[in-house]
Length: 176
Image 1 (tube, helix red, strand yellow):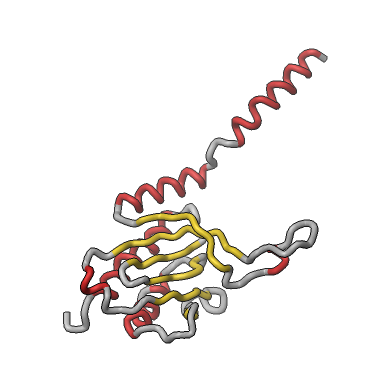
Image 2 (tube, rainbow, N blue to C red; image 1 turned 180 degrees about the vertical axis):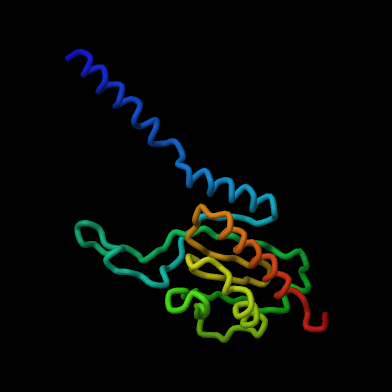
């Protein structure tokens, strides 16, 4: 009986310690983030309005309704060319990969029309983004991809390629 009690106490002490250790996927995500930060990408954990809110998902066990917020990781890259960056107005779109992953739909968050360069960028380069991409935004100097992060270096590379090529597309003039 004493050995059983000692074993139980050891389990109660060791279990919380083991549970806070990062899992393999968490380690992979941290490695991806470090790699991206080394390549000039800023990373921020944030919440956005869920583009497809499943109301049952946003209810407490007592039935109280919660705000439909989706926890995402924002990968963003900023241009250093100030004068060129002001040529394209700010925009934000939600991404719908569910209807057709090969040709996703992009809906502007606001009622204003997308600039021509934004349309070109989305049609030519955004189709390669991961299906877990929720939004894409441009504020005049920073291009951001909001996605539900996954422990896949290939998907992270797609996001980096989009950010890199997207910035080039948005800041180059039509005369270049």
